[in-house]
Amino acid sequence: MTPMQFTFSSAFLLGLAGLAFHRTHLLSALLCLEGMMLSLFLALSLWTLELSAPGFSASPLILLAFSACEASAGLALLVATARTHGTDHLQSLNLLQC
Image 1 (tube, rainbow, N blue to C red):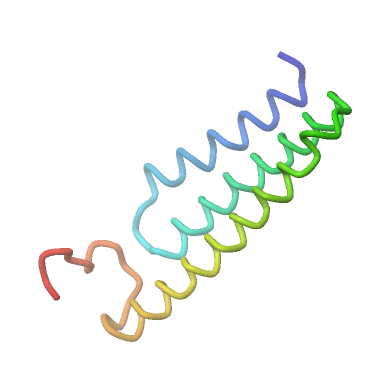
Image 2 (image 1 turned 45 degrees about the vertical axis):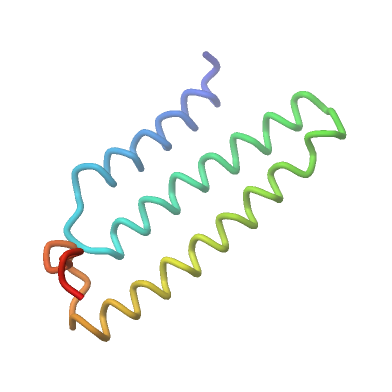
């Protein structure tokens, strides 16, 4: 494993660990997801540069577009949750209650 692959793998795993162990606020969970997507985007971009294949050149841009859609949907849910519940604590959200 090259140092660059180790760096991107550890960045992804740190985001995953933050998502798994630090789930108090919705905003912190969204930031961990964004960190994971950023590490995937950088790893995929460098992988396509190393392969220098024109067929794979659109995949980092597609991943970036999905990441932007995920971020906008997450922020919309954060605003809706803050308006209805008054807080973004994940413990206060109950799926059984309308």
